[in-house]
Amino acid sequence: MNIFTPITSQQGVIEMKIKDQSEDEAIYYKNSLTFNGSNLIEHHSDGNFIKLIKEIDDLMKDIAISNEVHFDITDAKNNRSKKAKCSPEGGKLIKLIRQNIRLIPTYFYKHATTPRVYLFFRILRRRLEAITSAIKSGLTIDELSKITFILARALHWMQYVMRHTKFKRAVRSHENTAQQNLRSVVKYIIALFKKHSRLLILRIDLYFLKKHYESITPQLNRVYLDKFLRALSENRIVPDVVGYISTTEFGYIRGFHQHVFIALNSNEHQRDIFLTEEIGKYWTNCTDQKGNYNNCAKRKDKYKYCGIGMVHVSETDKLKGIRLAIAYMVKGDYYVKTLLEKQRTLRKGVMPKMKNKMGAPRKNPEDTANMCLILQGKF
Image 1 (spheres, helix red, strand yellow):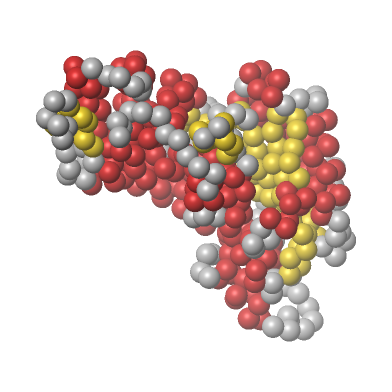
Image 2 (image 1 turned 90 degrees about the vertical axis):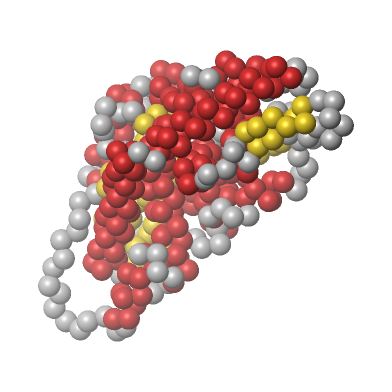
């Protein structure tokens, strides 16, 4: 098969594509896949966009350590024609380019992401015209030789840069920051559970209506988010908020959007769907009717480990759901950092102050220890 011809796929590909994803990522990803005849169409929505960036990052890791000849021209079996031969990494590169070529000219200007993904788009963008013309059937031998050479040079430059000491240092710095962010969020949630053994957990995705995507600048998104988080922390949207986490992302389809995790004092409230709706309505109003939202509490049955609703410090499966959710949120912050003039894309509430409590300790201190391990990902 010519490595530059379009891909077709059967319906079963959807399940194959999502089987290795986390609960959150699988739901987002599955909802972004449709078929046009036999062709699989991947719409680059929120979760799928992050998945794409992760695929590129993983491929770049493989390219950095590979010593294979990634692209070459060989004789066909009949010795009358030529064919392009590629390594596994080269084949993955072709697939990513073919499925996502429309992202290359726009992404480079709109995103600051992992050093490896930044390098991927920067190198390919310079070769976009030649690559675009090559993704056609019926290439002549000269055209096939030319595009093979261009792709081989692209991978050569990727390898050259990624093996440089300064680049490796930049990768370590980026990864250390991501790990610090995750540890900080975990520490924050552990502190909330130590102060309140039972919490009402709400999750909501805040975004903008499609007709307003072009008008929502990084600065305007920040203005709306600041207003929203201030009201949330001051209990002006829903009462008894004890903590929150918010991550800002930029999706190819939805533009700027926020994933928000909210913890309430469960001794006072239990209606997670209703309260999340109230939060969503406030977002719509505070954005001058430009905003919309997704109430995650309405799809609790979709999760294997559901960390939404009433969660006690002893409920292992629900704590696992919280861990998966926050890891997913921070992962988006890691893979898709927008150019927001060095704004924070990850924000959270004030760390709760622990008071010395009089009276009997909790009946089962092992619950707290187990909760800490689960939220740290040790399960």
